[in-house]
Image 1 (cartoon, rainbow, N blue to C red):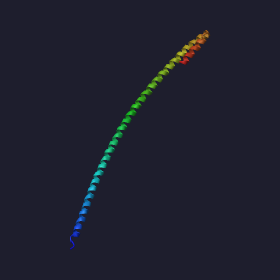
Image 2 (tube, rainbow, N blue to C red; image 1 turned 45 degrees about the vertical axis):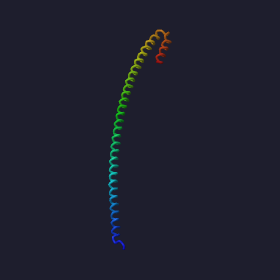
Image 3 (cartoon, rainbow, N blue to C red; image 1 turned 90 degrees about the horizontal axis):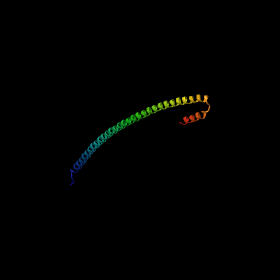
Image 4 (tube, helix red, strand yellow; image 1 turned 90 degrees about the vertical axis):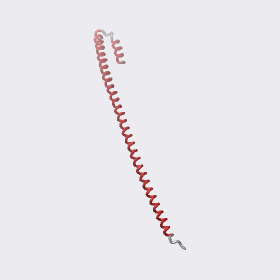
Length: 128
C-alpha cells in the first residue's frame, strides 16, 4: 500500500531546504555586509594615513624651501657685500694709479728720461 504521507514528507523536506537556503542567504548577506564595512573602514584609515603623510611631506618640503631660500638670500647678500668691497678697492686702485701716473707725467714733462719707467709701471699695474 502506498504511503499517503509521502507528499507531506517531501513538502517538509522542501520547506526545510528553503529555510536552509534562506538562512544561508542571510548569513552570506551578513558576512558580506561585515566585509564591506571592514573594507570601508580600512579605506578610511588608508586615506587618513595617506593624507597625514602628504601633509607631513608638504610641511617638510616647505621647511626645506624656507631654509634654502634663507641660504640663497645670505649668499646673495654676501655677494653684494663682496661686490661693493671690490668696487671700492678698484676705485682706490684707479685713484692711486691716477696719482702715480699724474706724478710721472709731471716728472716726464720736466725730464723725458723716465718714460721707460712709466711704461714698466703701467704694464705691472695692468697685469694686476
